[in-house]
Length: 109
Image (cartoon, rainbow, N blue to C red; front, top):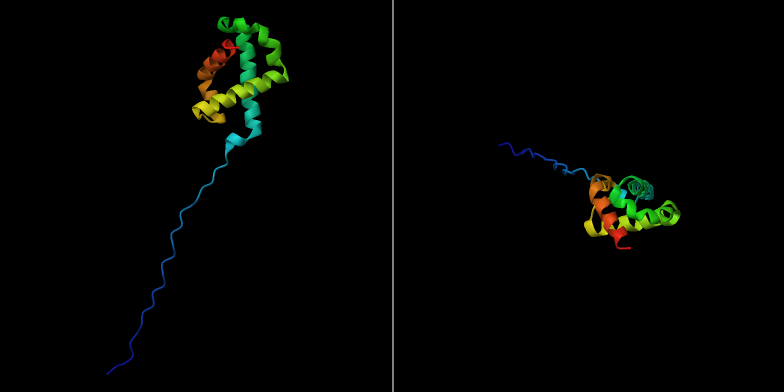
């Protein structure tokens, strides 16, 4: 009788590791925030000059052109973002909505 038994060795299957993606949080980018703020500040100045609806805010034009105006627009956009959970990079896509929001906020001054 043959007492030699062959033992088969099975190596374990390597674990399947899915790829993990980590995206950079663009909302914390100060350059993006500054760019979007100046975009809406420049648009607000053009709205005041060209849009009949915004003509009544002509008295705020000098303030908006200064650094105080940039800070004011930045705070308005920050409040808008906190209320609506829209990202900074999506603000330009919501152009009309932000235009209405700025109009309402300037009217309440």
